[in-house]
Image (spheres, rainbow, N blue to C red):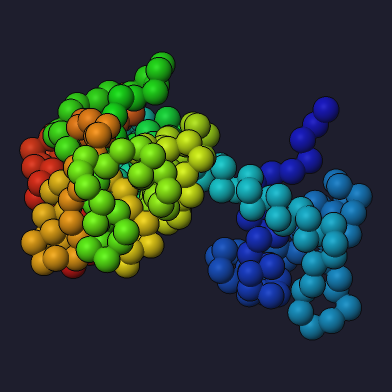
Length: 304
């Protein structure tokens, strides 16, 4: 079966739709109008469909033309991505890298490192996304990210990624001074804790099973998007929960939260830098720099 579509014809179709006329499309593609007209007529003949309604002053797509344009743009994007990937492989330098940063960290704290990265002139575009809890692993394994900064706990089995522990976090159970649990005798028992709402930062995993921690079976839960909002909800007295000690210090010192001893405390957790093993020179440079970071310097602050 012969293929009746070409990337060139799809580019012409896209240009006409964007520019609104055959003449404007020809100008944008640095071609003569007759060549544009021929390309579209040939495409219509090959497909045996009418792509444009030419009765008005502006070139308007038919329903068939609109459908071809929508799917054709997907093909053009895919072709562009393939071309970039081939060039990246040839040069050993990525055209784009996505970095997933844990919600435990202040994203702006990595900006000085990125400034140094841009000074290397790799020409690589950087995209930063923020992930919560197991989402840091999910982003890496699913391909949403190339590097994950702050992935908590162990990697999922058979993840096929490189990892390096960059620090350990200890947790304490925190409540607002006006919360009912603040006045109960210590250590708090599970039967005390389960009577009151827990505040949880929602795991941002899309494919891996979401992780939860410190929530008792049957306990009411207020779920918020990230650790910053979890802290604010606990300060407001909307619930209680575990928070990394380094994040708690300032709020305990200013009296917004108090730490309560619990009978069954949450254990410390290891934080990882993780990355896909098929990266090029730009990723390798970033990995070396990220390994030098002190997690205490990049954790959330009250200014976040």
